[in-house]
Image (tube, rainbow, N blue to C red):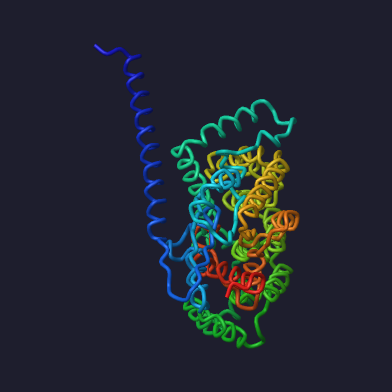
Length: 484
């Protein structure tokens, strides 16, 4: 008869065997995929054309996370290069690996160079240096101030990162966390609940009822147009109200504010909101929703992020200052948004304060509890930010020098919406090329016609975003290298 200890031993053995099977399968699939990519890149010469090979190195942004393989920036770059070239044929190799860090790229570079034999290399790497610790040279740069517990955690992470299974689970966890965050922040309170919460405050006086009857047709028409996304027509219908929209009255004011917002008329929306608050300073829901609009604007258009988030914080704090004591739902919602905003801006102490306040009202709030763990886990990265900066500098410098040894012209890229910063400094320091991808994304998202260039995960580009990356690289290669 099996004892309890034997059962536990069998369970553990089964668990270990399962992990080993997954690990072997992951490594085998990775090898097969690399072979598949090489097979699909067999170089065929064309009469009268000189072949130029380009090697794209990096992480999921090079791989093409969020789109199909043919929509990744290397694939689109190859297509664009060959469309404009008469005397040359271009082969672009995609060596982007999701989860890659700069240490991993450096370790495999010699093999990649001898496998692909490129004339040009494009490198976009660094976003995973503090999360994927496989092959890292962190110990060489580590801070002596790091606590023993954190150092042990880091060493364990470095050791486990050599396993494909661990890396897979880690990437899945990060993706799930991102999707969870987006789902939480897209939660909307129903209009019915809003009306019930503020019915007492917004009950019109006799004078209001008289005016509401007079303008009912205007409101109905504008509301119908709004629901059908005919925002300019709805705005004109509202402005046709005799005497114009009056900030004293809630329905027409909030509808016009939303119409302004839908048309990116942020200055007009803010001005009208300020006028409205002169008469309705206690309308905490309207204030909260306006703050949320600014939060979503900053998330959608990174070029406006800093100013939008500042405005959002101001409105959420104002909403908290005037919300009813018994309206726990709205209080917690304000704390949730404030916690995330402070966290995004690196103000972890303020974020933790908001989390504490929110959990005191709703102890089992899933989002606040999750964010509390995220902040706790991010402390290592914040304390060691300078270490990872030095690590990136070292690795990129080594990569550049190795490429130069093989007479490969290398260009460093920065990430979408990222400022030039460190990567441009490193490129200048080691005399490599630099292509400013970030500036092009910021410009495309801050012009008159704002364009969404991100996939559904809110992090990686969509097909249009990868096309912009390819176009930016193409423009840089043409004058600097005379590739055509």
